[in-house]
Image (cartoon, rainbow, N blue to C red; front, side, top):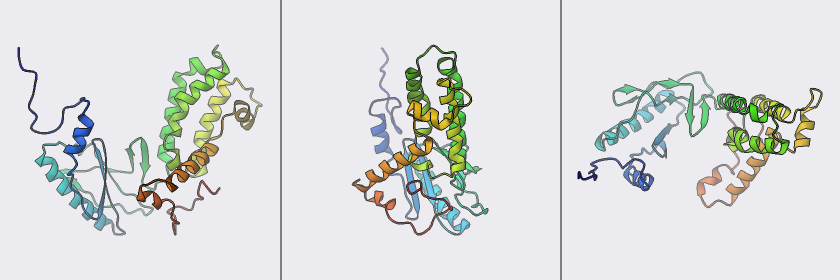
Amino acid sequence: MQDPSLHLSSGVPQGSVLGPVLYNIFTSDLPQSPKVAVATFADDAAFLACSRDPKQASTLLQSQLNITHDWLTKWRIKASAPKSHHITFALRLETCPSVNLGRDKLPQSTCVKCLGFYLDRRMTWKDHIKNKRNEINFRFKNLLWLLGRQSALSLSNKLRVYCSIIKPIWIYGIQLWSSASKSNIVCLQRAQNNILRTLSSAPWYARNSEIHDYLEIPTVLVEAKRYSTNYKNRLATHPNPLSNLLLQPYPFKRLKRADVLTE
């Protein structure tokens, strides 16, 4: 019988119970630069360089990518440059110069997806809300046979299906994207209005506010304020010293927009 064991000279076994722990140990010495923020989650990594000069920001980022490429080559880890993105977060129209990972140039993007969030160039959350609404409409369309007006399912069970399957789509990360403008948030509110009106078989003359009150379902803005307030209160007692960054007064804002907690 052939020996099933295999000697690994690099990497960790995929799908094993200890895989995540071993991977964290294996990548614990990922090189870092003093002026570049490095954020890792599982096998994803993000590098953030900040500067008023776009060329200087790209120079700092390129320096980090160079030492990262050498580290990846040393430990025989293959990074996919075509699947990576280079984005400039700024209100100005000027874009940072391109950067390379090894010999491959990273493609420039105006929106990137990170941990379920769609981050646009100006951080308005417009693309994120648009994608979430499309996902809500797609999920609701697939469940229309169960939530539609012709369904024999009781109203209470329809609400349970909505709150457990559809609502978590837009609730995820609401503490962050709730800073979007009301014109963007209202897009999600329209989607919820349509769903609640359909599953409750409400007549055309019924107001959306009356439907929400009858079903005891809060609006998107109410949920945003509740989640944001609870999150801010938890940060006040969190032992991580970085949590104080959100509690300190900020002298200016990137966009002229009111805080969701003070509206």
